[in-house]
Amino acid sequence: MPNAESPKSISTRRVILTVLLPFGLGYYLSYLYRTVNLVISPRLANDLSLTPDDLGFLTAVYFITFAAFQTPLGVMLDRYGPRRIQSALLLFAVAGSALFAIAEEFYLLAIARGLIGLGVSGCLMAALKANVMWFLRERLPFFNGLTVAFGAFGALSATVPVESLYNAVGWRAIFTILSVMTVVTLFLTYFVVPEKQAPQPSDKGGLSAVAEQFRSLSTVYGNAFFWRVSIVTFIHNGAYLSYQSLWMGPWLRDVAGFDSPAIADALLWFNIGMFCGVVGIGIIADRLQRFGVKPVAMVGLGIAGSISVQAALALEATAFAVPLCVAFGFFGSSTLLAYAVFGQHFPAEAIGRVNTAQNMLTFIAAFAAQWGVGAIIGLWPALADGRYDPVGHQSALWTMVGLEILGLIWFLWPRRNSEAK
Image (cartoon, helix red, strand yellow):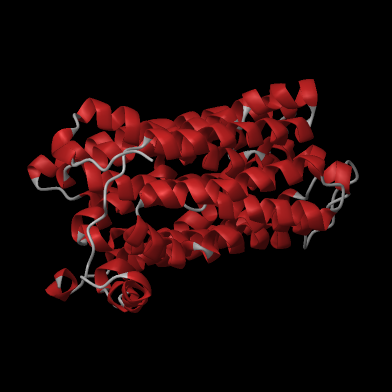
């Protein structure tokens, strides 16, 4: 086990190599697992004779198991630190990916997808917890942006590279490869990341301390500022993740008329937009703080831009399909700044619980939106060539846009200064 080290005894460069990089690789895998079905979904649905509802559920199982573990995850991260918790959870991802590679029945694939969701449920939260522990608070938008950039690379890998790999070896081999990559990341996390004791909110030990941390969740869920940010990101992220991880591909096929290679290219551009967003918006937010502009303002602007893009998709602006993919990826990624916002607003000893509370809401929304979009699309019979009716896509998008507008109104509604308490 690595020896415990203090932030004063280790250089920033070494922290980046031994802390940010291993946890970033974990988030890379998390996003790759999340979005891998985006390209392979037509073949997966064909192999297993899945309806839109079935396909949405199979992909969304990842989100609901992910969300279900967020509350205990936050307590465990605050109590035991990100290194140990991340290493233990990745074992489940290894098992889930291996099972997905060999399973023949739909229910086994769903169980495997659920194990993957559980196994990578701590990847981003562990990384953000480590960033709070090792970096200065005012640099969190920048370093969190670097961490999230690994996720953008994971999403990029789930487009053209996965398409090429699928054509060469098939989707089962892809999950075998992912299982091996997860094992490597697990070993890097456990043996390379230095140990650093997380600050504790009390002097109690053992189960008493854990129970006290669970009870302290009421201070998170009772915080007005938490709900102001979380509700709008809850609604927006549900729509954003459901399209990024599944439904953008069928829209490009059924509405824009793209074939499989063109879909993979467009999704690559979607995730290039996301990469530019997580890095660029983080840098902009970091710079604007010098002029008194808080990162929370960038969250609101990004969501407004994302809603505008979704409205254009609902209006079937297919001539601009690829630019809209880029814009959707760019603006939609802005809500990842919420974690930096919370990192600056809440004390370090509580940040694991705060971030996982936000993350739980995000992935509950993603599960509901991904399954719900499939259910709405499925209200219209499939076309003769197996494609989904464009009217179904349009109805699903307008539903998401309407909900997101309500969330943005909640976010912008004037508040009293009591939020700062």
